[in-house]
Length: 309
Image (cartoon, rainbow, N blue to C red):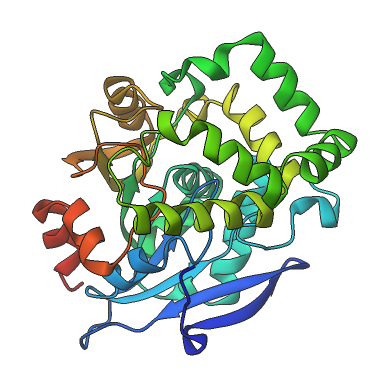
């Protein structure tokens, strides 16, 4: 498992929810600040090397997302984990840490991009202090999906069951335990493209990371999120966000249609610049080092990040 130095992690409480905040200082003197947001099925540990890479360009702040990374879920405060809830959480976080008074850049991955886009739709006044948004394999509506399993009726039934109180508890106890997960990983590993070209040591590390993510992240939140992805559409809000959005995409994303995503993002943001990630999947299970992340981000994006405001 990846271990983060304790000096970089602090406990936080936002809106009655307890979690953690990763703060990585800039590697060189700069005023740049980067708010880094992860997606579904993630954690501070999974994204730590990503934060290390971004610290080349500024101070990095990466908060846990409710229901993920071991943070309390919205159900604790009797809210559902929809996009408005995540937008409100990010708004409170930004206000708490006074990021609305300083210049920041936002790098948001996958579901994290949905949350920050909804935030900026609800609070357009925040854009005056945001330099730009980088969407790391982001998307904007359910029709961007090309993943056929989400369209199957059986998947919808399972997801509906898993997002209920009883169903999520049932699945967490009987399925999302380490023994059951290890058995499933052993059976399906040969068919999983994440493991296909990895050596034994990397495979073992990835397996431990996956076990941690499947057991640590809140099961009910996970399934509600899957349910949400079947029906959401951020383009229903017709007013564009007055910011430049840099879309870091890959043509071989197994979940999304790159051309549909491109059209969607043009509807959401006033300016769109496309960049191609050096990546063969939506996201690798684990990225080993800062240097591995650097290989994913093209030079065009690194030049943007390197600019001082």
